[in-house]
Image 1: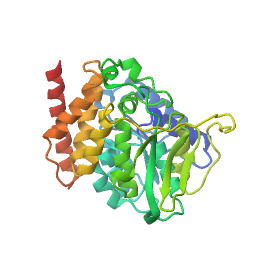
Image 2: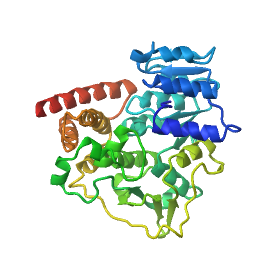
Image 3: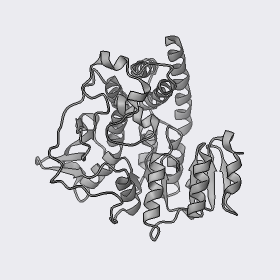
Amino acid sequence: MGCTGSIGAQALDVCRQHADRLQVVALSAHSRTEELVRAAREFTVPIVAVTDPAHAEDSCLSELPEGTKLLVGESALEELAVLPEADTVVVSVVGAVGLRASYAVLKAGKRLALANKESLVVGGDLLMPLAQPGQLLPVDSEHSAIFQCLLGERAAEIHCIWLTCSGGPFFGRNREELEGVTRAQALAHPTWNMGAKITIDSATLMNKGFERIEAAQLFGLPMERIPVLIQRESRVHSMVEYVDGAVIAHLGASDMRLPIQYALSYPERWETPAERIDFRTIGSLTFDAPDPEVFRCLALAEEAGRTGGTAPCVLNAANEVAVAAFLAESCSFTAIDACVAHCLELHDARRVESLEQLHDIDRWARAEASCFLAGLS
């Protein structure tokens, strides 16, 4: 799901390199139908979905392989999730739309290779009780790293998880310097090649705030035991420290195909799709602490994570609206965290009860965020 995005394209590359082990049985895209058609033809896929109805009549769709079934609309993701011929589903769509799809995958008893962090941020309280051991495999490089560092260990013996972070393109800048940041500057990530939305989240450090909430859901630790560690070289993908003082770190290339492949191969390990690192040439690894006074999204995510319940849903929805506005150059970089703070302040968090409840709160937060940003212009 989300085969034309950065993660989706790299997942298809893994499938391409391991065609003897993996068969692609369904694909979805939101609006990039030409890329969807190319992938469907290459992998001879029997069913595809276009989640944006405005692109359901794109002329290129006539070039789908003969007999390929076409589904349309966001609800199509839930249809793909329960296909009997699929045993593993990679959910790499962007935003809260991935939650219903992830829920459907787990309910159907299939393996969920999760690259949609909003699913756990918004609806982790609904998803985690459904996930059986080994059923939910994280695709985020950090969470995949943590998952691997925990293999064979006892969860009760964890002291903390060191969640690493590149620091983004603005590491070391002060608050005043962030106010004039441009769209182009924010999209220039120093390490990873990602989609626009997640790249902006990485620049504000909201992405790392989301990942702390994710880690708390996945590994059952409170937020205070998941500190963020700046690791500028992006070679250490996260670490787990145990009660006896031992620290197990996961190191490797900055290539998302590695965690994608592991989510598909688990519990096996397959030949790497990436270039190997010669550790003799790295020189050094550096570590630092983030500044939540400058990167306020990190503090806002911690606040929402500690509050729990529906607060992370508001955090995510307001952030999506603000990031879209920044990418459209209709608000400043620092207006992103101001918008999120405004919505969190107005929200009275409550216990998560259903997908419908989260949908209503998501809609409220988006409307409130839009009104706030309109008032700034």
